[in-house]
Structures are given as structure tokens and as C-alpha cells.
Amino acid sequence: MIRAIVTDIEGTTSSLSFVKDVLFPYARARLPAFVATHSQSPEVRAQLQAVAETVGRPLSDAEAGAQLIQWIDEDRKITPLKTLQGMIWEAGYRQGDFQGHVYEDAVRHLRNWKARGVTLYVFSSGSVHAQKLLFAHTAYGDLTPLFSGYFDTTIGSKRETGAYQRIAQAIGVTPGEILFLSDIREELDAAQCVGMQTCWLVRDGTPPADPHHHVAADFDAIPLAP
Image (cartoon, rainbow, N blue to C red; front, side, top):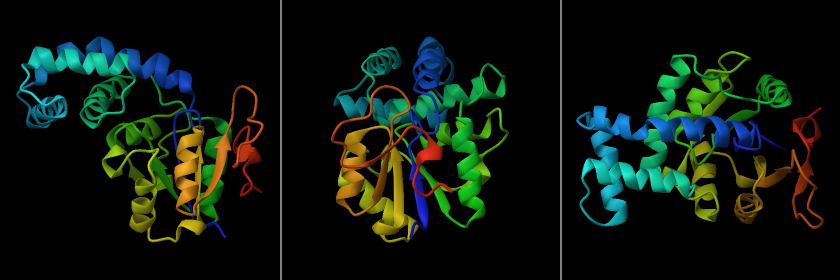
């Protein structure tokens, strides 16, 4: 019996192109000016210090900004970068520069599962703040009330089993009663190793020949779905 569902965002509930073609370029274009303008803010200063700690040497604000741009170009999943991106995206959402993209089939089933008493959670490499912003500003309205919690890389890498053990502990549900949804095999493998049930979302392209996970083209094809 599935008591909880943990879902990825990119390629799962939401289009990869929205993140890669809208959110990432938006933050990249504004990051240097954001750092220069807000460097004395305690929240921003803490993240700039985290950048220096990550690279292992002191950095000027300009050097930290350049490092952040490099990490964006390398598609690195590093916590201070994700946190600062979330701060920049917040302004974009509030100004109406874009809306968070969520597939219609995902919205429909998330609402259905919630109504059936299944608790819903998000696990994404984007910061918890960024996750909440995306689901709060969609064409379907504010979807954040659907979720009971959010997890990001502060709990561990999405490709490491330890992250899924800690998520199960935080949720308070045995791993076998949790269904994890993702479009990345390595993430699904890690979740499966701790006993979670898994479903591989393959919205585009050819389904893998030997997936070792249930494969679904969309949320309508997820086994839990009625």
C-alpha cells in the first residue's frame, strides 16, 4: 500500500525545458547584478560565504559571482547556487515574468492522491524555496497546499541512498510504503536500494529496454493512478 509519494520536478511534474530554457537563463542573466546589489543582505552574504567554503579559499564578491556563473554553465547541483537562484526566481514569479510549469496530468493526479489520503512530498535539486515558488505560481493556481513537505540537496544527493533513508525517516513512513517518481535512473536506483517503490517518468524519447523500474509516459500511467 502506498501511503506517501515523493516526486521529482524536472521531467516529472514539470517540463525540463521550463527549467533549462526559462529559469536557468533568467537567473544567469541577473545573478551578477543581484550579488552586487544584495551582497550585504545576511541571507545573501551567508550563501556567498558558502561559495567560498565550497571552493576552499576566500573569494571577493565578484569572484563568487563568477564561480556561480561557472556552476550554472556546468549544471552543478550545489546548495548555495540553488539558494541564490531561488531568490532571483522569486522576483521573476512575483513580477509575472513567468509561471511555474506543471503538466495537467500531474496536477490532476496529485489532487486525486491528496484527496485519497496519500501524503505528497517533493525532492528536487532546486532549493526548497525554489520548489515552493514554482508550485505556488502555476496556471492551475497555488498548488503548495497539496504537499506536506519539501526536500532538497541539504538532505543529501539525489543519487545517494542516504538521502532516501533520511526522507523516509522524516516522513515517518516505511520505505516500502513510499512511491518515488523521477525521470533519472540513478535517482530511482538509489530510492529502490532503500526499499522505496519507484516509477520512471519517460515523457519524451524511447522507454529503456531494461529499466528495472516501472516506466510511465505520464501520470496517467502510474500504477497508483485510478
